[in-house]
Image (cartoon, rainbow, N blue to C red):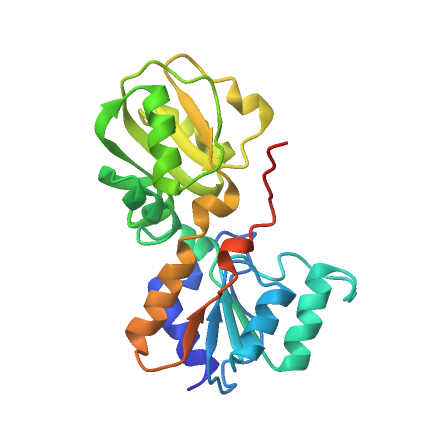
Length: 262
């Protein structure tokens, strides 16, 4: 097995050509011709994930977030990104990321959110090309509900500790838009398309001042996207059912945002 075999399977699911212009999806460390004996799948490429991969005998890691986003002027072992780069290279571990590529396919991040909420009539929120890919999704709740009911429903379905929300509307809320990750910029578009509720992450303070009849929820960046790890693993195992592929055992503890009740 070669690295290129794994990347080809992932790119059949989430093609590199659809990534955003600012993104850095794809093979970040290594060569497509490198041999690979096992793959570890995680959310962020950290030193902890690379060590876990090495301990399992894996020489490739696949993550959602790219290890390298922008140009790096120096690689410092005291910097988390620099330390991960150095460890991956020293350990002979290839690093691949499917970021906005996985955000823009209906079976990816936002589609997974819709399935978790059991939305009906799901369509892409910001369609591109022939309308089969694009950011976010929009659909209908299984039944109309009030803002307070929607808060309880979303919290339960995502297993959340907390939700940041604008003032709950009375409802009824029927049409819902979703965008995994940082989706604050698309709130106005979600409303323009008839959504009474928009669920995403990394919403700025002023965006919580919402118009009448419209509500936003910030459920957390990690929480909105983490299901993509299982999707990546399923794609690899579907193509290579007997190949050594693993989900990080530390995934549930890898969210860099911590919540405290004091």
